[in-house]
Image (cartoon, rainbow, N blue to C red; front, side):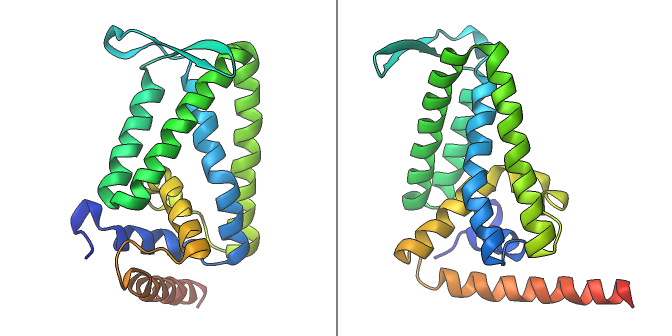
Length: 202
């Protein structure tokens, strides 16, 4: 059964889906959304630890580096908690991937150093965001969701593309009837948007 209010996954997913109904645009987002999160965490590695918390020594591929409990860690934790609250199964997987991104981005940042890392992050962010805007402008023919709901687009996008991939590959849904309910809401929202668009044109 779906949750209500802030954690109404069906409502949030329908909002996202209304902006991502074109198959090519969906594929573009599946390709670029998680790299945006990864590279954001990479540059946030260079922020100081919060409340003076100690660094955690970690080893990966034979290389030692520090995991810093900083803004990047807090962002990862917030994302992870939100996703689990939305759906325990898919949310736990998303939370796990978030922490994998945090650890891997910390490892890469420690290897690159700030002087090179910010250039890599800038290039990756430009490519990923350009790809998504092309997906919306050329294929979806609708402005990105972030123009209407910035926080929802940034916070929920990684979870939504994962949930969409799980549905496509394995037929997963958080509860029976979820995708039928979502699809009905998406169609209603798209129809409403098209009607408004026609009125503006007329």
